[in-house]
Length: 460
Image 1 (cartoon, rainbow, N blue to C red):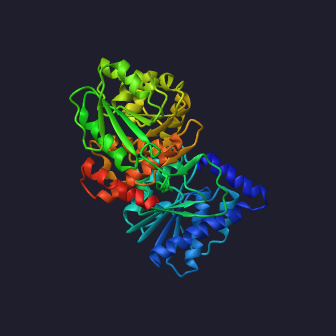
Image 2 (image 1 turned 180 degrees about the vertical axis):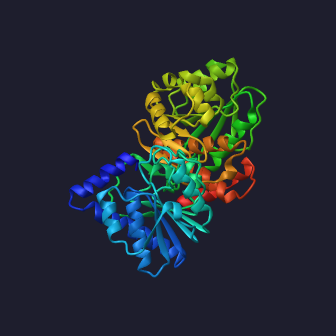
Image 3 (image 1 turned 90 degrees about the vertical axis):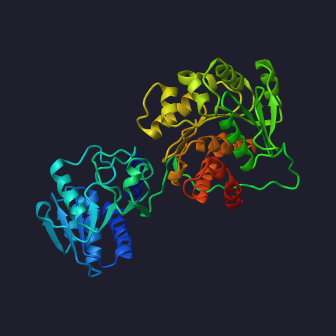
């Protein structure tokens, strides 16, 4: 939930008769129990800010104190909210001025949490850094101080924590870079918040296996439109085949070789011939972009593919060739469209540098009336209706040439089964990340493709 959504959800609980003090008790004691399970009786210093995040810290410290933990609080100011003042009144341990505090084995950060919009001041942040550096274990409560809650932004140059304990609901910055890399192990505490958000964490899909009544066309025919560089189109076709498509064809100009005997290559004479081939009603999904090139022929291939009636996945050069006209080109299509840009390609579509990944993805998805998968270590999937999935599944080894071509093939394969563009994109992203995890370190695109049947098996 965003900061605004969290505030509304908390207010609904308060309106129902649950006090702010009770919510703070639930959050603080839940976090304290998690800290206790992780580190038991490790000497602990809790850094408490003047707001409600600091109030959570007082509750945490008191709970640990009652477990006979050697715990103390460092605070730069007295609490300024009624709930935090109440929490402090229940604290029976030692409170130290921030300037006098010394590091402990465990550092618990309750200086600032959800809703922070500006950097922590130099004096406070200097002491924060000193206490952090002197600890052996570091825990952030809700969010690390110095992180904006909604966009993954770092308001201060903060170090990486061992654990972050989200309170009530996860926030966007728990999964968006560069903030996500600072979270360490991420856990959540339920305080009774009813989540009401268009933002979800991508989870393992449930995929149905073919039935005895299926045949190659009912399982989906994927058509790959090849361009100047055959290797990328070959990878895409192989990925579509291994991800479950019943039939994969490549439409290419003469001289193109099939990557596998079961993948058909049909030679394209000219654009009229391609239009005729793409009009085949048995085609369930079209892929355009991997290895397309950026010449005049590429522009013609783009125009022809967009004019076809089948669902379309556009990636790589297809996006670059479309450029700022992308939204106008695809929003009038009769079938669904999926675009899978990385940050650079996204900028070419919008004529603006990527600023806020969630908001920018949603804006383009709405303008183009298509599903957007914005690639990266914090992949975001946005639907035209405003629904958003963030991928919590990471595999840094996917940052290799050809990985994006494989992703495009997987998504098209899922799209060809007849599910919605948004669902196909979510399924494809999960399968791609999981295949990367199964492939191990330093894999090739072909090795990644070989793991797709195993990832599908996990979802059946």
